[in-house]
Length: 401
Image (tube, rainbow, N blue to C red):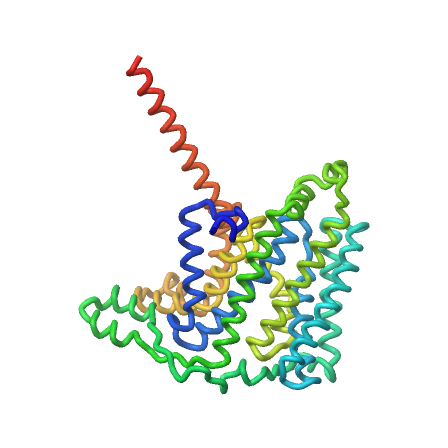
């Protein structure tokens, strides 16, 4: 059954399988394991970026189409929902109208970009998409009377998705990291730590919105996994390896490239709409900023291009490091308590330095991305085991003879 759900594309690494199971459990039970609004926001952003990075990997990793207009489609989805709610009221009908309008606009723009790839390829296509993305950012910023300019727009979600809606009075959660902290630092207070780890979860419309986001992320990921392992996905990989040979075999590569650009844009637009409903506020900085495009590219490379599982690993590692690396440095600085140059290096204010070093180290030690490198190591281990078994059989036969 698992083979069918994953479309035959298993993780093919024990370490990767354990990591994916841990991430799945953490996302599924996150609101009941990690207290606090920042942890809740981090879980939601991980789900959003799983969709965004997986859609981008469909272009970059499977078809080798480099585009810097990905955030433009993300912003179209976010602003589409915000404008739809602003004009038609905070109802599900307004959300549907906003998403539909955003999808239509994204499809039209993606079609133009896809047709543009007929004449402009490789780095030149990337530069054109970069120019289009900056032009769109400029338009959104200057149309203050419609988009709110740099101030952005507030998204008034329906009551069923807001904090005022409470389908359940209270649910008990368990602070996993709080209990582990007591376990490793104060094992003599384990009983009190276990008792204090329980907390009350306010199960509101925000929680429902998170689980809707989690469900959409899972369904879209499984859909993309099925797509890349279908005949359509095999053609995309053939185009990635050698587009000229794919054309010689009779495949209309222009159709496939354009279809990938459109599909990736539509999924990213939908992710932007989910982000607007979850975050309840959109502006150019959190939807259209070029820095966000760099982050998406880093997540894709970090997780592993051409491996959809890399979208999950890359999004989790990047978002968690972005939100909690400063806290880790603060705790380390207090624990070590070293002055001078070394002490200044581990100050929480220098977290961006370590964030960059973390990425450099990951690229150095995982040149194929985390998922790709784990699969390579697993393949090598299997080959060594196969060779060892073959040598054992040969030795046994020699002794018998």
